[in-house]
Amino acid sequence: MQTVTLNTGIDMPILGFGVYQIPPEETEQAVTDALAAGYRLLDTAAAYGNEKAVGRAIKNSGIPREELFVTTKLWVQDAPAQENTKRALDASLDKLGLDHLDLYLMHQPYGDVYAQWRGMKDAYREGRAKAIGVANFYADRLVDLIVNNDVTPAVNQIETHPFFQRTTDQELMRAHGVQIQSWGGFAEGRNHLFTHPLLSGIGEQHGKSVAQVVLRWLTQRGVVAIPKSVRAERMAENIDIFDFELTDAQMAAIATLDTGNSLFFDHHDPEIVAGLAKRRLTA
Ligand code: NAP
Image 1 (cartoon, rainbow, N blue to C red):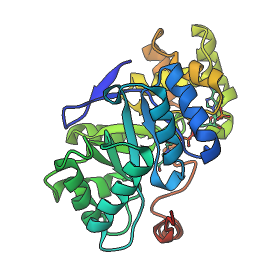
Image 2 (image 1 turned 45 degrees about the vertical axis):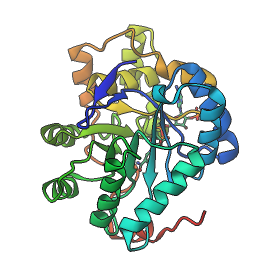
Image 3 (image 1 turned 135 degrees about the vertical axis):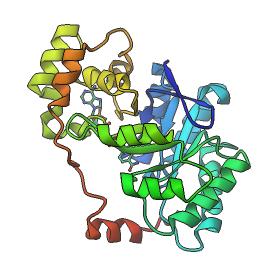
């Protein structure tokens, strides 16, 4: 598996497995299948409610801990956030059955992010998270966090797919040493992604599926991808992208699909900000 080196010096697989929207009762099997298919980067979150099932699959796999790259995410918490960050990390580690994470992400750019970041820096310095980063930070919030802190996020996990390509954001992150990671790499199938004529045509030229073209396009751009699937055959398909290369002309053709806008929601929308910031995890 190809890797990228984070600003902490650790290597992260360029392709992993995401478990958002996998019900807890299906997650253990899905992660077991993903590990069997060869995935070593697992991406979960406290807010997904399936950390325990991820932990069981890790334990039962027998795969040495050092071969895995496990990410989870801190949900927006009540103040005082620095202490709550420690508690939230303790809870996540407990559910996952791990003594450290490879990457701990602040899930949303809301609430007392500076206190949350201080708590995350504590975790980093204590070795409980080998790297810390953020998710859903648009350029303004990301730069503000960077210039006002002594630890720069290692990763920013943001919506990135053919219809919202984030090339300017990627440039900015590169300039600051922040690794871009895509969520929703398939746009969860929106805009008929899996039957899109341009992507299908490119796939036919390589004997590959649309999903494989999209994941190849992301990783060829240096974007870490974490596709989700509950189907073993799709997991195998999605990891089989390292035996072909998109041409410059194909990369340029895919670039024309960018709309520059989210297909999900705008993190600047006041209703979204209020809704996400108010959500509290209960267990
Ligand atoms: P996604 O990976 O863009 O799309 C998942 C959808 O694609 C599922 O419906 C899946 O169906 C289908 N699919 C997967 N492989 C396929 C294939 N080869 N052919 C056809 N369909 C296929 O969506 P996502 O889960 O939203 O994003 C990926 C990961 O990013 C998440 O799991 C999560 O870890 C992370 N994420 C993070 C945030 C954040 O705020 N930080 C937000 C969203 C997601 P089946 O399962 O039925 O195969």
